[in-house]
Structure formats: structure tokens, C-alpha cells
Image (cartoon, rainbow, N blue to C red):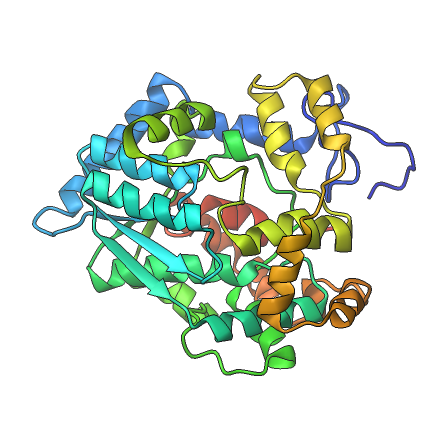
Length: 384
């Protein structure tokens, strides 16, 4: 939060001075808008140069995977972006293996979307299903820890499953369905996760051993990058991508169904974004996607500010579902919601290690051996 009590809103998007580590230029444009511009220039997003860069990458993937059953792994969640990416890969002549981390909190629509999509495209599916009692214990641990990252284990587990599937089948390339144009730029310091963070919170608050949860310790993270040299590619960063057009295409050709909003294909992420973050921490990540819509001209800025000003309405049935899964009584849930707020700084993480190794990670990010978003978000000191 800036020192001034006056609310300053970016003159281009709707990020304001409550966003972590935000600064404004003389024209009132925030640093995150400038970061989007730099990424669009770097990747040629939505231009013929970007498409050519992506076509060259796809040709390299095909050449590297020649003679193998699969030439890339694509993570699928049942959401818009990953579903469209799988279709794009098939259209481009790639031979993907779809991979899914089932944290047992999926919505029925997401599960159905994955099944219909892979069947329609003739794509094999690799799935890792975590023990439901085990993952519920991890979720309970994060609630008791009082940190914002309630769903950090899902993000870590998902990436570990992608990397494990790639290693098992000798695949070098992992394709991710992420678009900074449509999803926005996450504020630096607004969210943090790594395998050490998950392990320490569970060590302090967990009651069951983590046997089926696919955590990613530091040594394994480095092994994937340096020994297996798995490359992460985000094809949607290069092309003129629209969620709206993607949904229409998927609904018309794949029997795919929309689940209601960003991150709402999974109950854990839905709870995080509609209950835990806004009610417990006053964090409303709707501004990421809304700002992205304003930047690309899909939403009027004044309309976006008005939409963002309306409070998030929690779903009592979802809260009851979460309490049942983690074993909270109404009194325990209330105590958890009103307990002390903590951050990743209160737990053991790999953050300082990432910062010390920043020069190495810059090289790895430029070679696509770690995601560029990881380098930008985790390898620099965070102002408090």
C-alpha cells in the first residue's frame, strides 16, 4: 500500500495503489501495464512475427519428438485456456500427451470437459489423483497457517505432474495454457508458492503424511531444468488469443461447457478467489482479468472500475463444502477466518535461494528451462 491515503488508479487499466509493488509513471500508467507492453514486444504477441516465432518453436518440437509417441505434454484443467491450447496443438500437427493433476476438488463440469476434449481430439490422458484425505489435510494446514495461498499445493502439484509425465515418456517440451494478455500480470509479492513453503506449512499444521501429493523440492526443480532440460512453452503468449473466441470454438466443436469464470473450474480455487482471499485478506484478484480486458479493449475502463467496485458475494454452500472436507465446525471456521494473518515470510521457503541464484535463473528463463513468469516473480527481492 502506498503511503498516501488517496486512491490512485492506473490511467490505462484499473490497478490501484493497493496493489503490491506498484509504481506509476508521469502519465499515471502503472508498471504492470509497461510490463505487458514489454512482453508483447518480446514475444511478438498477436503479430505475424509472433506467429512465425511460434511456428518455428512447433517445428522444433516436432523434430525433437520424431520417432516418439508424444512430442509434448500439455496440462489440462478443463478450463478455457488449456482446452484451447490442446486443440491448437493438434491443429498445428503436434502429438501431445494431455496431463492432469486431480486434487479431488474438481467441478463436475471440468472433469466432463477434460473427458470430452481428449476424446474428441484423440489425445491420451495422463492423470495423477492425490489421496483425498491427504489433500484435505494440506488444505486444512493452509487455513490454519493463515496465509493467502490456500491453493498453492494445487499449483505445485500440477507442475510436478507435468514434469513427471514428461520425464516418464522422454518428452522435452511442456506447453502451458496461460495468456498474460487475457489473464493479466500477477502483482509481485501478491502471491507466493514453492515446494518448501508447502512442506513447511504441512509440517507445522498437518496431521497426515504426504505420500501421494506430488510436491516439488528444490533439488528436483533443478533436476528437471538442468538434467532433464525440460522446456516450458506458453504458445498463447505469441498469438492473437481471445478467451471469448476460444470458448465459442470449444462449445461449438468439442461439446465443452463454460464453468462460470476464471479459476472457477475447481472448488478449491473458487473458494480461494471468492471467499478466502477477499474475506480474510481483502485481496480481490478480479482486477487481474478485468485490467487485462481493459488493456486489450474488450471492456470500457469506467465500466471495469464499476464492476470491480461491486463486492464478491461468497457462496454459503461452497463454504459448507470446504468445512466438511477439512473437518471444521462452524466455530472452528469462524476462528480461522478471524485468526492472525501471516505471509510466506513466516515460513521456510526457497525465496532467498531463488534471489541468490537470479543470474542462473535468468539464463534458464531465456532458454525456456524455467518459466519466465517464475523468474520475474520469484527471483527478485520483494519490497514490503
